[in-house]
Length: 345
Image 1: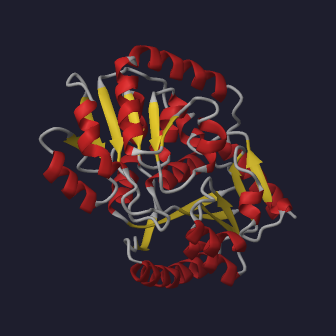
Image 2 (image 1 turned 45 degrees about the vertical axis):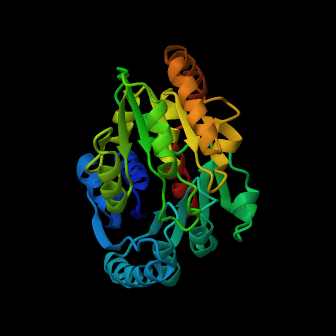
């Protein structure tokens, strides 16, 4: 069975790598990506074989539109030349549209119903959608799917690759700060961790190294110019899970690195005022696997308090995470079981 997987972000590359590595023998997986600085580095780092089509469209809606249309045409030729049996993405409007036009069953795996623009374009075209159990089915049904097309799995997305990591957890006095997705369509200007860095850095004790992890070259240039003397700024793609696993505290301006920290049992703060993320509101916060900050003042205060009590925070976060992940299933096995069942109908 020839499966085409389209991966557009670093998180999706990690998930695609887990799918390729865990695919049953009857599946032949081909991965496509797009030109995107952070993604390119991760692909090299994790050794994921892929073919690149198109580019990241940037922040402006018209640039996103032009990049998306051009990428559709490139993927159309690629898909027609390869005679795939089905396709899977993590909400790729281009892969969904090309698959629909070619009569390919397209499957989506996602934990991001808050990404409304991409969801409106791709989700209605899905044959089935796979998602983490804390997300309510109704959140996907508003995009046009029926309940019998929705299949939750008892795990969170990062478990697909974290469960395959070698055991390690040597804690260093490091605070990792992940900058926000300022190019995302759902991002609200002025509502990111970047705007709080001045105050945040002031309350982090000098014994802690601060590592800023930008998402885009523009963020990297800005962070180096403004904070390069006080902080380490990641100059290229990092092995995010490994960096997180050895950190004392992770402050996440997005979703994936904060989720990785939560499942690895690393103290973490989610600062995402632009949108309410379902998996955090319904799972990580209630289970105390992540702490929530909604304002700059709240973020600064919470950071200061946690670092003053970091040893007990590390124990508590680790114990809670170990207890929770014991019940998780493997998302990779779940997805291939569903693909096998669906394709034989």
